Length: 287
Ligand code: SF4
Image 1 (cartoon, helix red, strand yellow):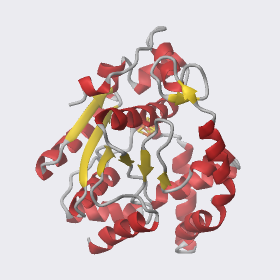
Image 2 (tube, protein in one colour):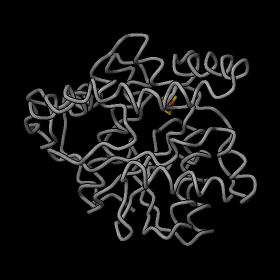
Image 3 (cartoon, protein in one colour):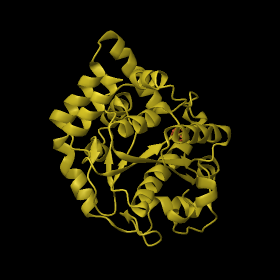
């Protein structure tokens, strides 16, 4: 327990993630990482509320929402909720099929857009996500395999606020998956154990498996790969992110910063909802 709290405290300090009195919104999925993160930040004394996004993936979404609500009730913490089918007009499975996109692509786009929009509309300057060391190392592996400079430029534990984007932080970057699972077991946090049914065949999981093989043979490889990139190589790509953000214009439908006339999320909504995209007024639908 002490180790996990200390690693989060150190990540917050080293990357200057948060001030002591800042309100934080945690993106909660009902899984071990986001619930453990919410618990640790609350234990460290931050004013931290949760936001659960219902993806419309039948039983899986129902079970995840139940875990998030149960934890919030147990800890007397505030949980906001957005439901994609109810509030936006499509779930990731049906929406992705109609829009001819992979479900994970529609899901990632919806999460990025709606978590940011909710944080802006509800007045949270900072959004925290439960990406852990294993996640970040796997993402870095994928980005490096493709030498995707734009993604490498954005891969950092803190993304500063700009152009309508709130500050985004990843306080679990120093902790691995097993540590988060152990933290939840010790604190009797009931989290969803099942993998999302859409995850089968996901490249991200393949990268994680490959890195686990390396880690078994050479312990510490994952941390060395990620932190040496952050310390020694990230800065070489950082200017690309600055240029990207300076070229943004407001979306003509929802007002979010984008490079096109209509942002990618509104275009997805238009395709998934038979041509209509309406700006989502989240503060009215959020519980
Ligand atoms: S596996 Fe894909 S659809 Fe499921 S939560 Fe992850 S990104 Fe979303």
